[in-house]
Image (cartoon, rainbow, N blue to C red; front, top):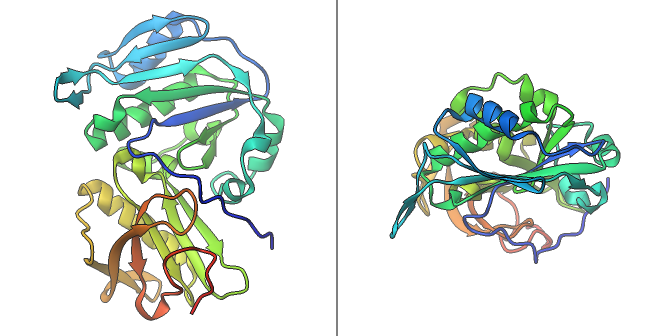
Length: 296
């Protein structure tokens, strides 16, 4: 089993810009202005405006949503940047090891030599469900607008999907952000029975990620638990407070017969970020300060 070395200088920026890299084998041109307007209106609705356009960048104001500031409300912006060279070797081994949703990720990262960067601006001050809806509508528009796109790499979470998986998905509307943009990761701790399951990507919605440091349970059960908790947080604007308890797992299913304590902490695994550490009681492992410490 390969051993990975952490870089704990990596920190997740609060309210960060959301970025997607559309990966391609060959270089492409900026789509025509009329095509951008047509495809984005199809997915985002008519309340949008292509407010800047060149061969280097296209800027779109999504007027159906509001970015709220003390000085007043402004429309959030979406940007499409020109196609540029891409070097998959810059994506580190830890990130590659957690691309569970794209088994062919190594082949894609090696074969795709170009990418188009797409991002938002001012999204950090949007209502979180509005931002999630806007970004997922944008995602669906992008894979239509760029038919040569082979895969989409979600920079904020390290998740990857093939473009075809995105084009053909039937994920329920409100589940799209968690499914596509939040990564649930799994790590074994070297020379220890302990494991870590954590999430990356909730910071985009100004919410904490999750973290489980445990032993003695099938990690697939814990991964499913994490997705259920993420969905609960998303649906209810994260009502979990420090030292609250949530339903744990009994016989592989969530159950109120087992209660696990939630504590807000700093993450064990890079990037350094705020997490809800879910203490699995008698199955909990280690000292929650660094992932490299010996487990008790």
